Image (cartoon, rainbow, N blue to C red; front, top):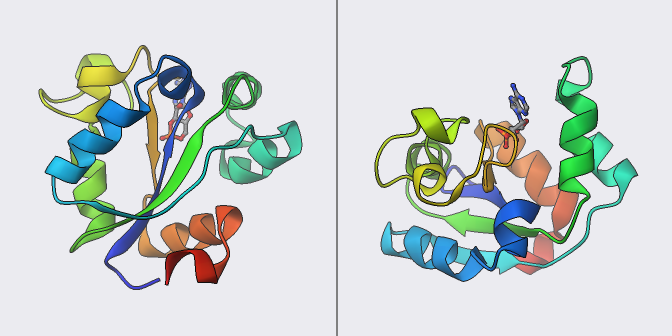
Length: 139
Ligand code: CMP
C-alpha cells in the first residue's frame, strides 16, 4: 500500500444501527474512494490480535467484547495523504471531544463505541489492510 491508502472499520455499534451507508457516503463526499470492503463478525482471537497493542490497557477486555458483539465493516480507503486525512475526518476518540462534522461527532455513542477505526500510520495501515484483505482485493 502506498501512502494514499488507509484502513478503516465501521464498528459494530454503527454497523448494527444501520449507519454504515451514511458513514460511507460521508467519507466519499470527503474525497475517499472505497477500494476494498467486507462485512464480517470478528472472532475473539481476531479482535485480540487486531488490538494487541492495547493489551495492557484497562479497557482491552471491554474493547474486545465490543468489537466481537456484532458485524463490522473493514475497508481500504484511498485519498491523497490518506492516514492523516481520515484521522481528521473521523475526529477525536471520544465523540464528546470530536469536532463538528466529523464521523464520530455525527455517528458515535461513546469513547469505546465510537463508530469507526482509522489506522494511525502508513505502516499500520499496511499491516491492518493485510489483516483483513488479500493484496488482490485492493489492486
Ligand atoms: P480506536 O482508536 O479505533 O482503537 C482503540 C479503541 O479502543 C478506540 O478506538 C476505542 O474504541 C477504544 N478506547 C480507547 N480509549 C478508551 C477508553 N478510555 N475506554 C474505553 N475504550 C477506549
